[in-house]
Length: 398
Length: 108
Image 1: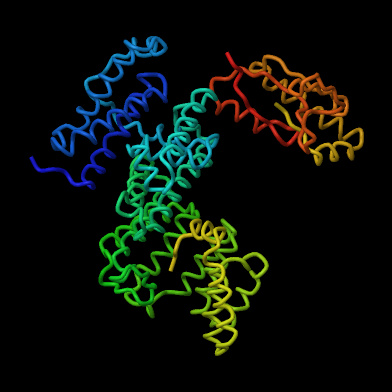
Image 2 (image 1 turned 90 degrees about the vertical axis):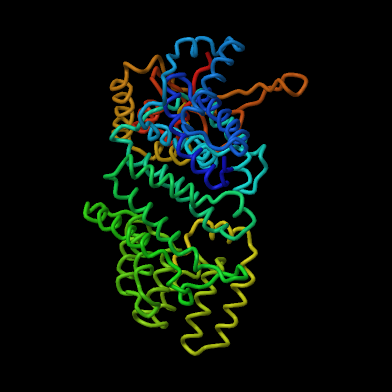
């Protein structure tokens, strides 16, 4: 039997662990206990599968281990007896119930860090160790976040269900924010020390695709999925052989995955037809303008500025204004763009990209001395932790 | 638990009698609308009526005022009977008075 690769193992676990958890919660009647059973089954799989190979029916394998463990618990711990005694263990996991799972993991009564850790563990089947490695934090920290979150779910009575129609928009925004954060985390650490252990952009795309499959008529879900695919489609061209970042205007566009770009374009178009625009759809549309251009000079900057205007209308943000100004340079020229950028001085004066952008524009205006000064200011701010966190919050559009 | 802020207190003080009457009316209406879920509720007297006893400093220490000198002060509570946190959150969102509501399960 051939031994499975890491990617193959990750994919199979991810395809089945969440489904198993989703079907066990209502059976066991308790989120935390069901989650423990699945986590144990996944740990066992990661011990056995690399040696024995992935079984023909991984879902049945995981299910059998979780069931055995559940029955052990039932015998050993009286506190589980009532819950587990009544469980009519079915022959196989029920139909896909992972939507409930996602809404519970991303409940707004949980802190964002716990939402992220819980989603990865429960929906994607990552172990605590894998999560810790991906985020470069101690395993005990992740373990505490998960333990505390599970306790809160049962103590505070966080329900295991899809939110009511009244709450759905807000609650969906939380789920999307978690996926978006995961994606950013993975995207920004591409090529870094965490890259080999786990590709979080893979998990983010998996979650977005899963959510899109379960809620196909939500345009913002489609928008986020398209956004993630557009970025991932261009990853091969982002780094030079030495690991340095290649800026968009210098990227070899033949390295892009043009099928994935076309697919994302169709997602955006279908979502847009619903006439319910949102920040993720607009961000995806902006990135699509870059991705669909055959070369740098063919970029539709006028359209990009229009999309930024719509985005600012829905989600005002100084960083978005800065990006709009960068696009404006190619429509109305560097002088107009610099005027826009300078209006942000009070808010973004500590942000390195503010100064780096000014430097670019000043150079375009033939003011090399001022440009150098701005470059120095940008440089002084690149090692600043506050700027690092700002960087993490924004996506690299360009 | 209902929590008042300095600003809320100031706004309430700045109201004329008719406005304050309307504000109290909205609170009464809220309790009436949700009476089937509310086990009981109490509004507390203002924080300047509080007396605090500290028992962790050797001799009991009695001081005038609330236990935290903060800008936010617990001003009342309601015990509610709901199925889950989402239902509690829906109730809290519709609360018409002070700007902070803390939800906590009752220990069994």
